[in-house]
Length: 244
Image (tube, rainbow, N blue to C red; front, side, top):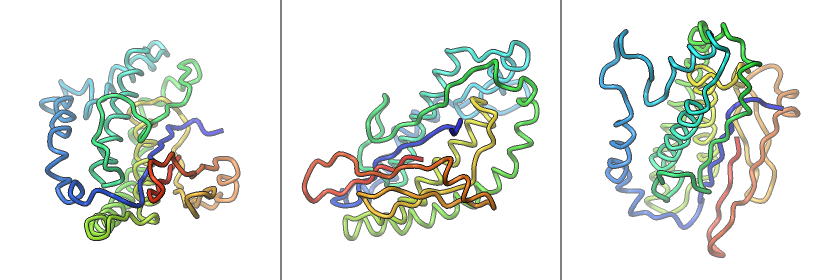
């Protein structure tokens, strides 16, 4: 069973709001300012106790010296990653629902069970280095998702429909970066993030996983994700739930 962060996003493929999609960069401004208010004022050697809103250094120190993960740090990091994912989903036109400040049913991020006693107390010292290949792959994913989002945005503005194959790639990229954050920054797991993406055949079918390693078959069997229809509000609305 996977011990990594799981991301779930309900993507409405039809009957999208063209107006809010067209003005998405303007509409995202208030919540973006709210997110940025959590960021440190300056990034220097004396002010790195938290990065981009997350508490990183306190977590690392707790694991290294006490082999503990304070519940209040875990709760904040989980809530902030969930909020950031809701903002990403709205910005990337995956949903028309404005990012809520609290949890909702459209976007959810699930952390693995964190047992500090099972975490390697010395890995926080080198995880930043071990994650370098993940950042490089993630950069490629991000570029790919950027072009998918441009295509999907044009499609939503012109037709009101979001291509399912675009949603697969964009949601997969968000989920991949969430796994990196969970491993390298939040340190909720010592399991190295997997390099795979989700492929949904239909709104009523199960998904398969295409891996980017030679162990594709074993990973697909061990870490199979689901893609199933989310609750619908109208007969013509087609929504797919991506679980990754």
